[in-house]
Image 1 (cartoon, rainbow, N blue to C red):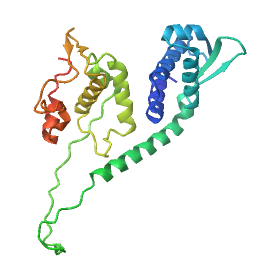
Image 2: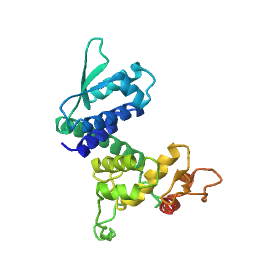
Image 3: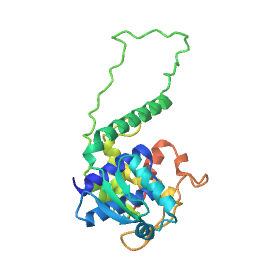
Image 4: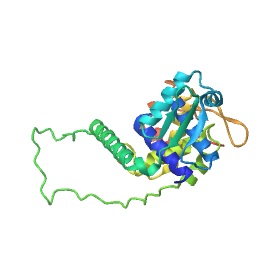
Length: 259
Protein backbone atom coordinates (compact mmCIF):
# COMPACT_ATOMS: atom_id res chain seq x y z
CA UNK A 1 0.00 0.00 0.00
CA UNK A 2 1.49 3.35 -1.07
CA UNK A 3 1.52 6.81 0.48
CA UNK A 4 -1.08 8.01 -2.03
CA UNK A 5 -3.37 5.10 -1.13
CA UNK A 6 -3.47 6.27 2.48
CA UNK A 7 -4.18 9.85 1.34
CA UNK A 8 -6.98 8.69 -0.97
CA UNK A 9 -8.45 6.62 1.84
CA UNK A 10 -8.42 9.66 4.13
CA UNK A 11 -10.26 11.95 1.68
CA UNK A 12 -12.91 9.32 1.04
CA UNK A 13 -13.52 9.09 4.80
CA UNK A 14 -13.40 12.87 5.12
CA UNK A 15 -16.11 13.28 2.47
CA UNK A 16 -18.22 10.70 4.28
CA UNK A 17 -17.75 11.94 7.86
CA UNK A 18 -16.59 15.62 7.60
CA UNK A 19 -13.50 15.32 9.79
CA UNK A 20 -12.31 18.38 11.74
CA UNK A 21 -9.08 20.34 11.26
CA UNK A 22 -7.56 18.75 14.37
CA UNK A 23 -8.50 15.23 13.22
CA UNK A 24 -7.07 15.95 9.77
CA UNK A 25 -3.81 17.31 11.20
CA UNK A 26 -3.43 14.33 13.53
CA UNK A 27 -3.95 11.78 10.74
CA UNK A 28 -1.39 13.33 8.40
CA UNK A 29 1.02 13.69 11.33
CA UNK A 30 0.69 9.96 12.06
CA UNK A 31 1.01 9.19 8.34
CA UNK A 32 4.31 11.04 8.16
CA UNK A 33 5.51 9.43 11.41
CA UNK A 34 4.74 5.98 9.99
CA UNK A 35 6.70 6.93 6.88
CA UNK A 36 9.69 7.84 9.04
CA UNK A 37 9.32 4.47 10.76
CA UNK A 38 9.62 2.81 7.33
CA UNK A 39 5.96 1.75 7.32
CA UNK A 40 6.11 -0.53 10.32
CA UNK A 41 2.85 -2.30 11.19
CA UNK A 42 2.81 -0.46 14.54
CA UNK A 43 4.72 2.54 15.85
CA UNK A 44 4.85 4.44 19.14
CA UNK A 45 4.39 8.14 19.84
CA UNK A 46 4.51 10.07 23.12
CA UNK A 47 1.44 12.19 23.87
CA UNK A 48 3.58 15.16 24.93
CA UNK A 49 5.49 15.01 21.63
CA UNK A 50 2.27 14.97 19.59
CA UNK A 51 0.80 17.88 21.59
CA UNK A 52 3.95 19.95 21.06
CA UNK A 53 4.38 19.14 17.37
CA UNK A 54 0.75 19.88 16.44
CA UNK A 55 0.14 22.70 18.92
CA UNK A 56 -2.90 20.97 20.41
CA UNK A 57 -4.02 22.67 23.60
CA UNK A 58 -4.89 19.69 25.78
CA UNK A 59 -4.63 15.92 26.06
CA UNK A 60 -8.44 15.80 26.08
CA UNK A 61 -8.56 17.36 22.60
CA UNK A 62 -5.90 14.93 21.35
CA UNK A 63 -7.79 11.93 22.77
CA UNK A 64 -11.07 13.05 21.15
CA UNK A 65 -9.42 13.43 17.73
CA UNK A 66 -7.67 10.08 18.10
CA UNK A 67 -10.91 8.30 19.04
CA UNK A 68 -12.72 9.91 16.10
CA UNK A 69 -10.09 8.66 13.63
CA UNK A 70 -10.48 5.18 15.07
CA UNK A 71 -14.29 5.32 14.82
CA UNK A 72 -14.22 6.16 11.11
CA UNK A 73 -11.74 3.35 10.43
CA UNK A 74 -8.56 5.30 9.64
CA UNK A 75 -6.35 4.26 12.58
CA UNK A 76 -6.16 1.89 15.52
CA UNK A 77 -4.25 2.49 18.74
CA UNK A 78 -3.48 0.97 22.14
CA UNK A 79 -2.63 2.75 25.39
CA UNK A 80 -0.86 1.41 28.45
CA UNK A 81 -2.03 2.11 31.99
CA UNK A 82 -0.36 5.31 33.18
CA UNK A 83 2.02 5.46 30.21
CA UNK A 84 2.11 8.53 27.93
CA UNK A 85 3.30 6.35 25.04
CA UNK A 86 0.60 5.23 22.58
CA UNK A 87 0.98 2.46 19.98
CA UNK A 88 -0.59 3.39 16.64
CA UNK A 89 -1.57 1.42 13.54
CA UNK A 90 -2.71 2.90 10.22
CA UNK A 91 -5.67 0.97 8.81
CA UNK A 92 -4.93 -0.18 5.27
CA UNK A 93 -6.94 1.20 2.38
CA UNK A 94 -8.11 -2.20 1.16
CA UNK A 95 -9.70 -3.01 4.52
CA UNK A 96 -12.24 -0.16 4.35
CA UNK A 97 -12.46 0.58 0.64
CA UNK A 98 -15.68 -1.29 -0.05
CA UNK A 99 -17.44 0.16 3.02
CA UNK A 100 -16.38 3.74 2.23
CA UNK A 101 -17.22 3.44 -1.46
CA UNK A 102 -20.73 2.22 -0.61
CA UNK A 103 -21.27 5.10 1.80
CA UNK A 104 -19.95 7.69 -0.65
CA UNK A 105 -22.10 6.30 -3.46
CA UNK A 106 -25.17 6.48 -1.25
CA UNK A 107 -24.43 10.08 -0.28
CA UNK A 108 -23.85 11.03 -3.91
CA UNK A 109 -27.15 9.36 -4.89
CA UNK A 110 -29.03 11.30 -2.22
CA UNK A 111 -27.36 14.57 -3.22
CA UNK A 112 -28.09 14.07 -6.92
CA UNK A 113 -31.71 13.14 -6.15
CA UNK A 114 -32.17 16.28 -4.05
CA UNK A 115 -30.67 18.51 -6.76
CA UNK A 116 -32.89 16.97 -9.45
CA UNK A 117 -36.00 17.57 -7.32
CA UNK A 118 -35.02 21.22 -6.87
CA UNK A 119 -34.39 21.87 -10.57
CA UNK A 120 -37.36 19.92 -11.89
CA UNK A 121 -39.85 22.31 -13.53
CA UNK A 122 -43.15 21.87 -15.26
CA UNK A 123 -43.47 22.47 -18.99
CA UNK A 124 -45.07 25.85 -19.71
CA UNK A 125 -48.44 25.75 -21.47
CA UNK A 126 -48.65 28.77 -23.79
CA UNK A 127 -51.43 27.53 -26.08
CA UNK A 128 -54.26 29.06 -24.02
CA UNK A 129 -56.03 25.71 -23.86
CA UNK A 130 -56.68 23.80 -20.69
CA UNK A 131 -55.77 20.49 -22.31
CA UNK A 132 -53.77 21.17 -25.50
CA UNK A 133 -53.86 18.38 -28.08
CA UNK A 134 -50.98 15.97 -28.14
CA UNK A 135 -49.00 16.37 -31.36
CA UNK A 136 -49.03 13.38 -33.69
CA UNK A 137 -45.89 11.57 -34.72
CA UNK A 138 -45.76 13.64 -37.93
CA UNK A 139 -46.25 16.92 -36.03
CA UNK A 140 -43.57 16.32 -33.43
CA UNK A 141 -40.48 18.39 -34.22
CA UNK A 142 -37.32 16.44 -34.78
CA UNK A 143 -34.71 17.37 -32.24
CA UNK A 144 -31.25 17.84 -33.63
CA UNK A 145 -28.70 15.69 -31.94
CA UNK A 146 -25.49 17.61 -31.58
CA UNK A 147 -22.44 15.49 -30.91
CA UNK A 148 -21.26 16.09 -27.37
CA UNK A 149 -17.56 16.77 -26.88
CA UNK A 150 -15.58 13.90 -25.43
CA UNK A 151 -15.06 14.18 -21.68
CA UNK A 152 -11.40 14.49 -20.71
CA UNK A 153 -10.63 13.46 -17.15
CA UNK A 154 -7.38 14.76 -15.60
CA UNK A 155 -4.77 12.86 -13.64
CA UNK A 156 -3.82 13.79 -10.08
CA UNK A 157 -0.52 15.23 -11.32
CA UNK A 158 -2.32 17.46 -13.86
CA UNK A 159 -4.61 18.78 -11.13
CA UNK A 160 -1.65 19.47 -8.83
CA UNK A 161 0.15 21.30 -11.64
CA UNK A 162 -2.95 23.43 -12.22
CA UNK A 163 -3.40 24.26 -8.51
CA UNK A 164 0.29 24.93 -7.84
CA UNK A 165 0.90 28.33 -6.24
CA UNK A 166 -2.72 29.48 -6.50
CA UNK A 167 -3.46 29.18 -2.78
CA UNK A 168 -1.40 28.54 0.37
CA UNK A 169 -2.55 24.91 0.74
CA UNK A 170 -2.72 24.29 -2.99
CA UNK A 171 -1.38 20.72 -2.83
CA UNK A 172 -3.91 19.55 -0.22
CA UNK A 173 -6.74 21.33 -2.07
CA UNK A 174 -5.63 19.76 -5.37
CA UNK A 175 -5.79 16.27 -3.87
CA UNK A 176 -9.13 17.00 -2.22
CA UNK A 177 -10.55 18.34 -5.51
CA UNK A 178 -9.27 15.34 -7.49
CA UNK A 179 -10.48 12.59 -5.16
CA UNK A 180 -13.87 14.26 -4.61
CA UNK A 181 -14.77 14.49 -8.29
CA UNK A 182 -13.04 11.20 -9.09
CA UNK A 183 -15.43 9.50 -6.62
CA UNK A 184 -18.35 11.16 -8.47
CA UNK A 185 -17.10 9.94 -11.86
CA UNK A 186 -16.26 13.54 -12.82
CA UNK A 187 -19.85 14.69 -12.69
CA UNK A 188 -21.53 17.65 -11.00
CA UNK A 189 -24.01 17.19 -8.17
CA UNK A 190 -26.88 17.21 -10.68
CA UNK A 191 -25.34 14.27 -12.56
CA UNK A 192 -24.05 16.19 -15.60
CA UNK A 193 -20.57 15.40 -16.87
CA UNK A 194 -17.80 17.91 -16.23
CA UNK A 195 -16.54 18.71 -19.72
CA UNK A 196 -13.98 21.30 -18.60
CA UNK A 197 -12.38 20.28 -15.32
CA UNK A 198 -10.11 23.35 -15.32
CA UNK A 199 -13.14 25.68 -15.19
CA UNK A 200 -14.53 23.63 -12.30
CA UNK A 201 -11.12 23.86 -10.59
CA UNK A 202 -11.25 27.66 -10.94
CA UNK A 203 -14.63 27.69 -9.18
CA UNK A 204 -13.27 25.38 -6.45
CA UNK A 205 -10.32 27.73 -5.81
CA UNK A 206 -12.63 30.75 -5.82
CA UNK A 207 -14.97 29.13 -3.27
CA UNK A 208 -12.07 28.13 -0.99
CA UNK A 209 -10.72 31.67 -1.05
CA UNK A 210 -14.18 33.01 -0.22
CA UNK A 211 -14.38 30.62 2.76
CA UNK A 212 -11.06 32.00 3.99
CA UNK A 213 -12.41 35.54 4.12
CA UNK A 214 -10.97 36.68 0.74
CA UNK A 215 -7.48 36.76 2.22
CA UNK A 216 -4.78 37.53 -0.41
CA UNK A 217 -2.52 34.64 -1.36
CA UNK A 218 0.95 34.65 -2.84
CA UNK A 219 1.22 33.91 -6.55
CA UNK A 220 4.02 32.18 -8.43
CA UNK A 221 5.57 35.56 -9.20
CA UNK A 222 5.78 36.49 -5.51
CA UNK A 223 2.92 39.00 -5.67
CA UNK A 224 -0.53 38.67 -4.24
CA UNK A 225 -3.79 37.53 -5.76
CA UNK A 226 -7.05 38.61 -4.20
CA UNK A 227 -9.48 35.95 -3.02
CA UNK A 228 -11.99 37.42 -5.49
CA UNK A 229 -11.07 38.24 -9.05
CA UNK A 230 -12.06 41.94 -8.82
CA UNK A 231 -15.26 43.87 -9.28
CA UNK A 232 -17.80 42.62 -11.79
CA UNK A 233 -21.28 43.54 -12.83
CA UNK A 234 -22.52 42.35 -9.44
CA UNK A 235 -20.34 44.77 -7.43
CA UNK A 236 -23.43 46.66 -6.22
CA UNK A 237 -24.63 43.61 -4.29
CA UNK A 238 -21.09 42.43 -3.45
CA UNK A 239 -21.96 38.88 -4.49
CA UNK A 240 -20.74 37.58 -7.90
CA UNK A 241 -23.31 34.76 -7.73
CA UNK A 242 -26.09 37.36 -8.27
CA UNK A 243 -25.08 37.41 -11.96
CA UNK A 244 -27.14 35.54 -14.57
CA UNK A 245 -25.89 32.03 -15.35
CA UNK A 246 -24.17 33.04 -18.63
CA UNK A 247 -22.39 36.02 -17.06
CA UNK A 248 -21.44 33.99 -13.98
CA UNK A 249 -19.72 31.37 -16.16
CA UNK A 250 -17.83 34.11 -18.04
CA UNK A 251 -16.86 35.69 -14.71
CA UNK A 252 -15.53 32.39 -13.30
CA UNK A 253 -13.53 31.67 -16.48
CA UNK A 254 -12.06 35.19 -16.42
CA UNK A 255 -10.62 34.93 -12.88
CA UNK A 256 -6.86 35.71 -13.31
CA UNK A 257 -5.74 32.92 -10.98
CA UNK A 258 -1.98 32.49 -10.58
CA UNK A 259 -1.11 35.42 -12.89
